[in-house]
Image (cartoon, rainbow, N blue to C red):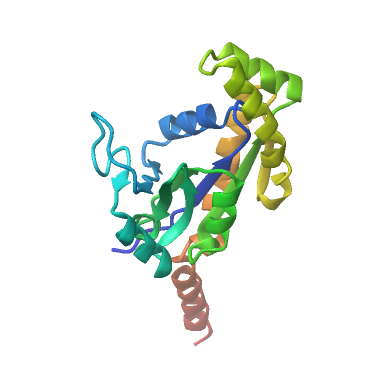
Length: 215
């Protein structure tokens, strides 16, 4: 039986510290049917990592072959290893009516937006309310050294400068408010005409009823 709707490919991007990861976690808690895209990588598994859970661990030749054949939605070379998003699992989820969540930077978002699944992409960029607040969040979360924080701050403007290539932009000045807006965006996008393949049959049924009335 076909799905009532097609799934969405939901992209969340932001500079580090703007709240993207927290919003993604809340979104997945809100709707348990959401799945998180598992990336492929050519790096070796670390202790405790399982293939298909943390990553799809892939030989470099196989990875490059997937890129050449268009089977990778986005990819990048990071510190000598390739990372990317296989298209097959995402395509299957979308056809089954399931949404897939991506946490990628603006470059990955652009690649996905230009992929074969572009018609199902919902892209959302999360902005901090100020650069001062962005730095405060990075410092108070206690995950990074001062050197790493400075690097993230330098990178933040490069990310922010691509805000206008996204479908929606959220200014995350209050996490609860931003999350409510995020839920509203996702709920509305699920009702887009292009996401509801069964609508044509409904309209044809209504047309048939009109024709029966006229005979």
